[in-house]
Amino acid sequence: MIVHDVVQGSEDWFACRIGRMTGSHAQEISANGKGLNTYIYKILAEKSSAERESYTNEHMQRGNELEPVARGIYELAMNTQVKEVGFIEHDEYSGCSPDGLIDEDGGIEIKCPSDPVYSRVLINRRPDSKYAWQCQMAMMITGRKWWDLVYFNPNFEQSMTTFRLEADEEKHEKLRAGLERGKELIKEITSKL
Image (cartoon, rainbow, N blue to C red; front, side, top):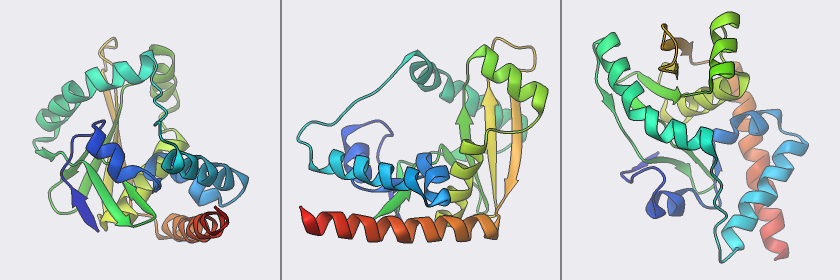
């Protein structure tokens, strides 16, 4: 595990991630099926292309603006300090970009969803599966025991809700199998280029 001290979203951060399977696609990796194949072709295209595809929308912009606020509120509420990190390299094929590490055993992933999405999370009292898998991959890579998945939306009286996720070895095994298959696909496809 190598921690790259880069600013998330910067050119250096993109350079660390390029050609690697990342935590934001952990659900596809764990499923180890057609979604993984599609994802591998996407990351290889990004690696081979001279122009990096950039995608952003109002929800992503909102997240970028609100994440530091959410982190500060979380630190106060939990009486802790979050150490920001750039990119954590698992190996030459994979890594993750956590929103922060906490003490020796924990980490944090922050989501700042729209009103309808946040409302659904509050009503259902469970996190989105995609983000739970992202947290599991971060725990697998870092060896940490727990991860707080934090949802933040300042438009609500209850502006923050947190789900404490524990490391799940069964899920980690699925991720390892998907990462191994992903490595094989990367090698196989690259050898044809």
